[in-house]
Length: 215
Image 1 (tube, rainbow, N blue to C red):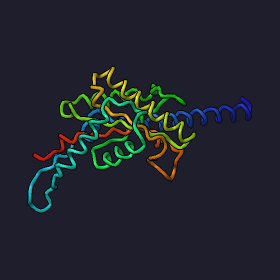
Image 2 (cartoon, rainbow, N blue to C red):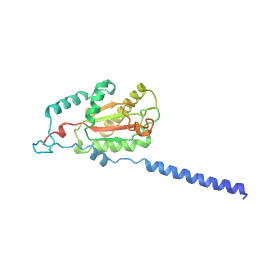
Image 3 (cartoon, rainbow, N blue to C red):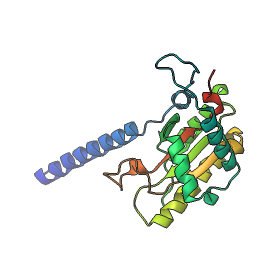
Image 4 (cartoon, helix red, strand yellow):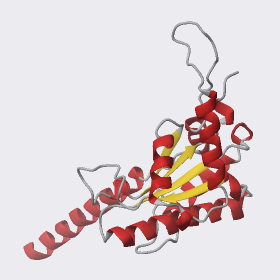
């Protein structure tokens, strides 16, 4: 073997090793959140009515108003929600049990990527947990900042609808218990890196006020 041949052989081996290592790191980074982890993250926080110091007080009037608003969103199409309604959902969701799931979709599409099917299946298993049965969940779609505002808004809505359809068809989740909303690029997970793939996500929020009521 000539020196050039030996060098080419060594280069090929080194390149192959580098590619194998890169592939391994990529696979290691795609950690799927288990159904148990999702279920625990979405468990409602119980509030106890009482007069002792440090005990959370329940505002039943505000709670009733919140329940009425959430109920008004049931069976609504994702696109029918106004900007004001989307913002109100976001404000309420800020105080609720929630989890961000990195569910990938095919490029320029609302179809779930094959690599993310397991993640959606874990979500379906979690929402089938008896402890969460009957709760109302918001399924919020988010995009990164690539593309125009209107396009990203529509894409996030279609992707949220895709998740809802999968959960109802594959796991029998009651469609009226899933409120879908799209936020486009308006609520980036990492505002300092608007193009980062981490911004392309689906957030699931347990909105059921009845289960957080005083006991």
